[in-house]
Length: 105
Image 1 (tube, rainbow, N blue to C red):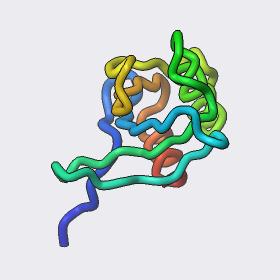
Image 2 (image 1 turned 120 degrees about the vertical axis):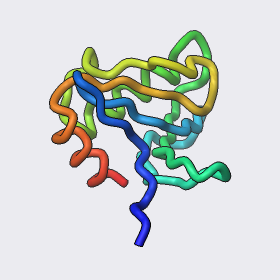
Image 3 (image 1 turned 180 degrees about the vertical axis):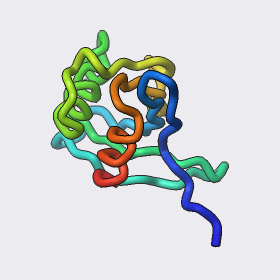
Image 4 (image 1 turned 45 degrees about the vertical axis):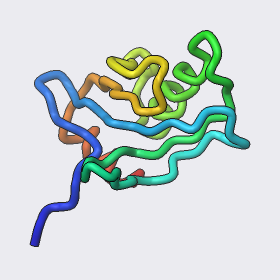
């Protein structure tokens, strides 16, 4: 049986998390893992902030930091600043963070 696709990749200082963000939503929420057409997995997020001057990105960082119990300074957008599909870098104990992300999904 094949392993389910993961929405993150472990690294030496934490992990990279692949997300799909819906800005300007009614509420901030983590909706779980979604499989894309190219068989990659992303964690779906909704934020009520508008995609203007980094407000949505800041809301994404705050939402994930709160959900994973890490400081906001540990979460940063490493690629996809202006895209719905982003890669976030989360510094810390990679396996513990991966367990937390799997619990969210």
